[in-house]
Length: 202
Image 1 (cartoon, one colour):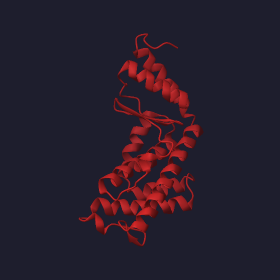
Image 2 (cartoon, helix red, strand yellow):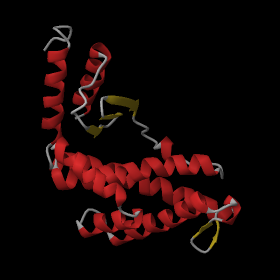
Image 3 (cartoon, rainbow, N blue to C red):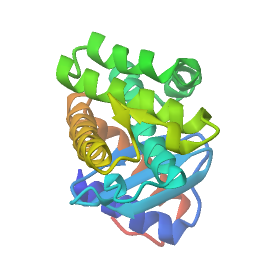
């Protein structure tokens, strides 16, 4: 998988475009790759899960990290249900995005993809996310039984967020294997190479 993602990134650099009908979200050992509606991005995989390493109480930083967590949940549901059929994923994604985040977490548990412990951890985090997003004063946001801004509670929140994020990354990687996602990625790669007008060999 990692080699396929790396080749995909290298090919994109040469082709400089991504056909809009491809919808890709792939996680390798060292890289992430995402493409939707012709827009694409990739980044080096944070082996230490740096994206989820929230060290300061800052509403913007925390909500940005939650956006990545939510993306992982959404894409795991999509891939589990429709495998790599990008046309169906687009339709399903529209529906999934309309669901409250707590229900998406419940769906992961219903599908047997997460256990009760991770479900509870994610639901606690989701409740905190809702408070941060809607409270007038972020200092009023709570995590479990205390205020998020309190040092001890914030440390617990940060630890649980990072562990939950890591668990979801590992889960998505497992689902990729279960649905043989690499076959789909190779198909994407083959079409990209056709668009390269011979620039990319083999």
